[in-house]
Amino acid sequence: MAANGTSFFTASGDYGDIGDPQSNLDMPTQTLVGGTILSTNPLSPPFPNPAYPDPYYAGESTWNQASNQQKGVTGGGVMNGINLFGTCYCWPDPWCCGSGVGIPDWQIGLMQIAAASNGGATQWRNYPDVAFLAADIEVFYQGQKLEGIGGTSAAAPLWAGYVALINQLIKRMDPNAGLVGFLNPTLYDFGLTRGSDNDLYSICFNDIADGVSNNDDFGPGFKSVPGYDLCTGLGTPKVGLIYQISAPTPLTPNQPLALIRFVIKTGNDDAGGGEHGSEQTAEVFFNDGTSHTFVLRLNNEAHWDNWSTHTVDAQIPSTVFPPLTPIYGIAGVRLNLLQSNPDLSADNWDVASLSVWLFNPPFSAATSVSQLNLVGNNQLQDGSIGLVRLSKSPGSSGDGPSSPIYKTA
Image (cartoon, rainbow, N blue to C red; front, top):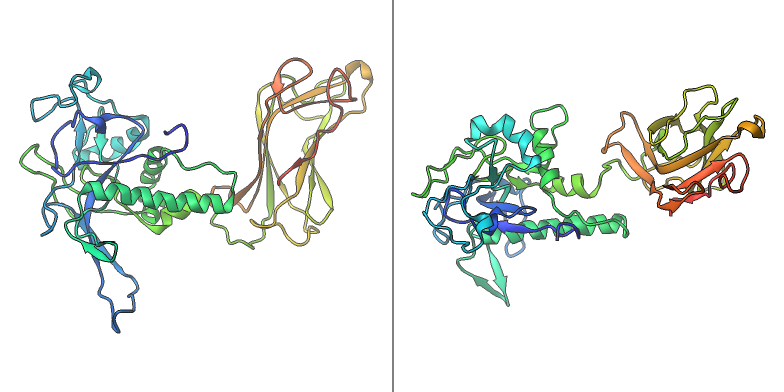
């Protein structure tokens, strides 16, 4: 499911710290969801069409037997192979009994920082990963309000619905884009930014840090502390998480972009060979029918070795009008090999991949918008695999001095 772009959310359990669940919770590539209690600020009359306050959200607390409708404690702990019940209730599958689950790579960095404060482990998988509302959930079905709806088994599908919104926005922006898939590596990367100059964590998550324990007379329990913890994980999602994941560029739609970036990987034949060398350029085509040629590499510069990657940034000419923006980008790109030396030392250049970005400095996911992202799978003239092989003239050595125009749409 993860390989197919499907996100999978599972309830972390309603019995607090039970040790290693030794159940399907131990399986990888799923996001484990703990529980919280949500508080909102009061609505203002007239009813039944009230005015919502700003903010409507008043805060959250760790779910621990605090609801009259749903008694329970948010599940969380360490998957160290120790089952506090003394049994292996996923028997007879030996893979999940008693051996423990090693810490996944996406959790290592955060736990090296946070284990001392949250009581977690740096060797074993810690859970939950995130949390959502688990008590006093108002669910209406066929006009009737259902009672007693809650628990982490309600929090998990709420997260699934939230990610459905992310996927909707991704597809609206680019129908050919993939789905978000397994989220944990990205979510924990956000967690690592907490307190930094680029604090994406506070943009994406409500941090549940009320000091409440998930002790439920099984294990000793853990407390909700600032940042990641073993009660509510990274916390509950904010709207900002939708935009951080689905919209890699929060630039305004009509914001002018000043620079263009080319990221080029050379394939099985380097750039710049030959007695007098060669020059590499990129001709960029604009939607108004004009074009501009950017120099990628001069003939007297160091060679671009086989299978090396090179980044070239250039200023977008002020003559381009209307200006390039996140919603009004380039039309296409053509790569060129320029060479005037004798045929005896004619050069070839293999291009394995090409990416093109428009951005405002400094370059980051928040200040850039992708225009092209091409990885070659063609068999080139020398039998290697790549995007294109350029040569002084077309023939058995290459396709000639210019590539096709790679269109952005």
